[in-house]
Picture 1 (tube, rainbow, N blue to C red):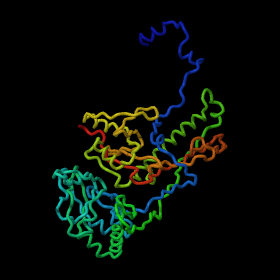
Picture 2: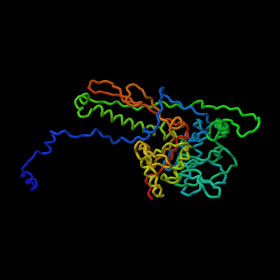
Picture 3: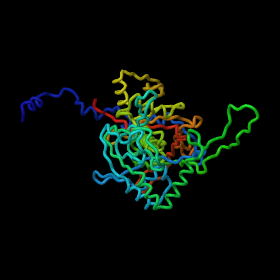
Picture 4: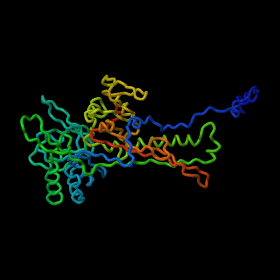
Length: 467
């Protein structure tokens, strides 16, 4: 026995020990805490439209769009391969479904590697190939009014240029393409493409129909032209016209998130003081469903905002981290009354760091009692549901809100049976033979982008880059 222990035993207890006293005391306790609860700014600011029939149809003017998507790749070690079906993301192959021909085209692509600063194609040279970017960033560089270089566009993984090069003859590049980062690029010469077309009557017919569609008269937005006359004098014959609509408009069905909450009857009967156990279980379950709801509104592959932005509404950062210049470029995509930016908190931190480097200090505004940072007067709202990739990159969303503004709207169905919040219900399911009480907790929701320019995305924002 140590000396310290003998001294402790020799000391005589003169008052009630705290351990014993706690047996007669009522502890002060919190309600159950949950770290997963976030600010959920998207749900707080998104206007929700009542969808009583469970389906929301977005009617639009007819658009003669030839389609423009991004190609996906696979790889075998360092060898990159184009997935044949992904070639239908190229405008001239949209809707073409002959797998054998698509495979033949995919096999004609050649892999090339470029270092930062390398010229991939040069303005004025013959345009006789299509380039598809498997990995990396490429600047499309043009010439300004006074002969200086200007960056027309930044291309990244899955982007391509230019399908016209393999459809037309004796044309030249109108811009220079320069690698910004190490790039892996798949390219196919015009001669290789024409060789496959010559062996495939179905592809030749498809390309003929594509050219006819591309020659349709459209306005700058790609919608069917409305013939008008302006600035005329005298008794001229006015053009006749009509506004055509899409014959197959997109329909959004309300999605569901559900769970069955189980509470033992003994717990519900005996352990309800000082707080109701069933209520606390239900409260945390509802919080979890709301978190999942916001996650789906952003990430769901069918209707989520990250997957439903038009490809021509997506831009790349000029360098790596999101800069004030990048945010201005994004505003240029959603310039008609943008409502707010939405970004992961780490992305906002990276943007703030870039502002500090330039000696810029964004202003703040108050929204629902909170001070929120703004850029050009547009609030930048945090949202941890926007993912950060393995390469430590993320995205910034900018959107316009509301039906009246042809913006982004949330969808729900308020007034459902046993509703506790709009479009969320809790239904008693009964008690089983093990005395377990069950409650079905359900919420219905979706989100719709009414017109393409209501949503823009700044992609591949690098986080944590060392100076």
